[in-house]
Image 1 (cartoon, rainbow, N blue to C red):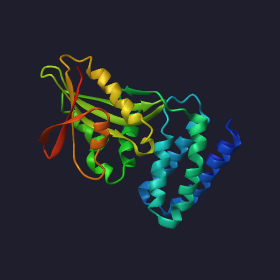
Image 2 (cartoon, rainbow, N blue to C red):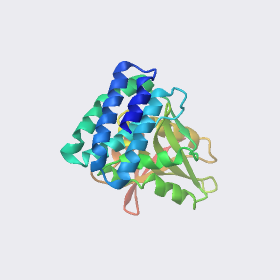
Image 3 (cartoon, rainbow, N blue to C red):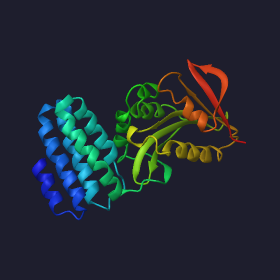
Length: 252
């Protein structure tokens, strides 16, 4: 992997500082690979090859590099001191890629396709405790959507980057509009993408028949998204559903 990627980078039309940073990660990852579990030995090279492709091919319309670098860094961190050179190299690389490939600003909701579904599922792998305990994985959510005729789901994009996932119960006959699943991948948290995604969702729900409110429920405790929902304008209803606090946003 190392020699192939460094060879590709040698002739790439990218800033020299970025080229050197990518080459550094390639070298450190190659050294770490034998220490990784078998599944990570397969996935890590493929993920980093995609990062290099995104850095060198401006024609690509979807960027996964922040998610893939996050997952590589997590796998490296699990190896303790052995993995720290990879983590440090990735830390130096990220701002250079951000400057080269960004900005990632405009937030929109997009359908999930054959080409993006695997990546959307991997967004869940970036979450860590305690936050990951408050939302089902995107793979589980998509499986449940297959059996619920009222499930409406979208990937959350910021620019070219898929950054999250949301799914609502969209039943115009009730009418009931319930935010069933919502997540922002760990590398993208704290950038305002979640708030913008809720705004896009509200804009959609307001177009639906009889839409007067948007409901959501969440668990309590460390890592709970309750404070986030309160900041978006949801208020507690006083109800508890399956152990979760129910909140409401009035739309009219």
